[in-house]
Structures are given as C-alpha cells and as structure tokens.
Length: 132
Image 1 (cartoon, rainbow, N blue to C red):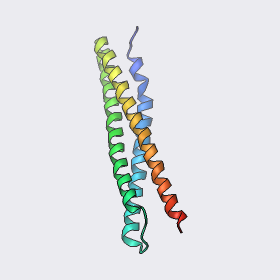
Image 2: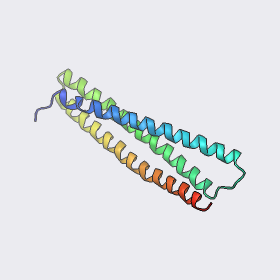
Image 3: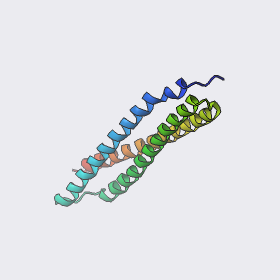
Image 4: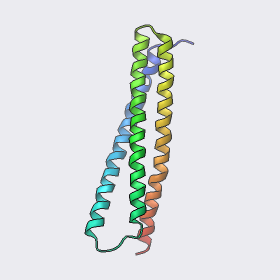
C-alpha cells in the first residue's frame, strides 16, 4: 500500500469543518443555558421540567467538550502523520493516521449521542408549551 503525505492531508478540510460545526453547537448551547437561566430567575411561572432540562444541558456540555477534544486530537494526529511522512517515517505516519481516524470516529459517535440528547431537550420544551 502506498502511503503519501496527500492521504492525511485529505482530512484537513473535513476536520476543519467538523470543528466549526462543533463550535457552533457549543455557542448555541451556551445561548440555551443563558436563556434558561434568565427564565428561571425572571419568570414567575413554574416550569414543570426545569430540573430535567438542567441535567440535559449539563450532559450535553460534557459531550460537546469530549467531541471537541476528540476532534482536536484527531486533527493533531493528522498533522503529526503528515510530519512523519514528510521526514520519511512512513510506518509511523501510517499508524498515526490510523489513530487520527479512530479519534475522528470517536468524535462523530459523541456528536451522534449529543444530537439524540438535544432532540430530547426540544421535546421537553414542546411538552412544556403543550401544557399552556
């Protein structure tokens, strides 16, 4: 199998876009937390699912942190792989690239889990609005 510097370089655009998407998710989650906080301390009405929403948001924060860490580590390993190939350490570059792909898979799996949790959060919001 021929392994060149072009192989790990293919991941650059994908990982960069992935990190952008994760950052956007984090920003939207931060907005949700701020809005929830303002509702909690400004609204006189009692929300029925506030504690469940807080648990949900905490779990999503952990997942987003893990997603971003895995994605960043994947990107780091991808760059390291290119350096190995550049310095003619092809076997090390090949192994490092495989690890990079593994961390990218972990990041994507965490992202999928976070999507399921976030849709549950929206279901809770809709359930709360149905009661009005």
